[in-house]
Image 1 (cartoon, helix red, strand yellow):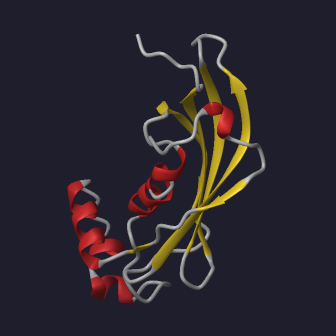
Image 2 (image 1 turned 180 degrees about the vertical axis):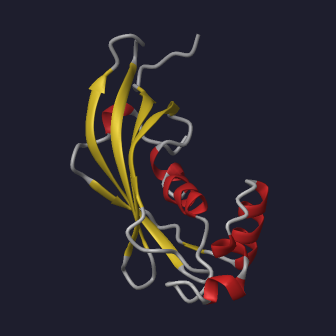
Length: 153
């Protein structure tokens, strides 16, 4: 697996992920309709053109999915036992169709689990930027991670 184990996370270290993703109209349309979010700011160009944004904005939950999904291969692929929760989620700027997003990850804190042997809890922050280097999403979450000597039962 290419994910990091609990011991591999260094508090304060920033990982710049190589994978980037351009958001398409299809992404926004499919995600918005699949999740039953009929907000016209996401779906109706005419409506959105009269808003403060002047165009449709991408569904923020799709942005959140990219913010936490892009880092998986380099951080948690095969080494996480689950997301324990989200501490904070912020969307300082909107994402528009055609924006290309990139993510960096920082380990905020970590500790061994007191209830699950050979596991640890890592506080992670994902920062997502568009092609103009504008911060569009910040997510702070806690992940239950395998230690290197983890044995599944």
